[in-house]
Length: 204
Ligand code: SF4
Image 1 (cartoon, helix red, strand yellow):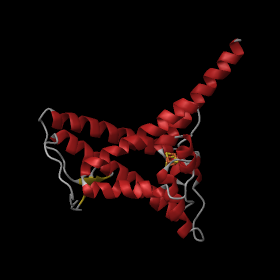
Image 2 (cartoon, protein in one colour):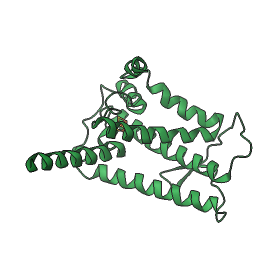
Image 3 (spheres, helix red, strand yellow):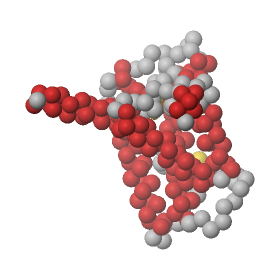
Image 4 (cartoon, protein in one colour):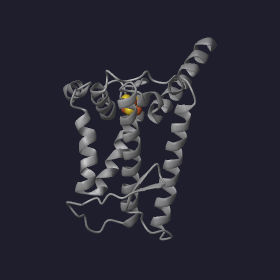
């Protein structure tokens, strides 16, 4: 297992995982729920190692941005300062929070029968994407709220990944990482744990 993780770290083909994730949505949309791993694994590793382990070598999306950014490296611009130390990361974190609240509340409404499942893709929560998602494999007897959650999660992953890709093409490849909600949450966590540690040392 350790050697598997070692091989995976900074592997140049990590980006394939992201491509497979989006392709799986066309096999069956319920595979979109695998995206929870992308959300929870960085936080698990953060708490376990007390550093941004996932960001430093295991993130398939960052690898995809690096690859895409290389294509336009000659014309790429510097990352805007308001991305690095301005309000942009808090705006993106707010979008992420609002998305999660919307996903949770609408899924609960579907589960209790007060809303029909939204079986369509949306960009930035509100913009409907007119893309028919063929389903190569059909799963039977899936509860409507699970299907709704899958479409909503796929939409959120699609939104953040394409925004990151656009930024990678215009600015430096990993510009998204300066405003990525996972990075912002990790920074807050690490700052807090550093402060706690300093307090503890001062009290010894
Ligand atoms: S900041 Fe976000 S996109 Fe960048 S490496 Fe970390 S989790 Fe991946």
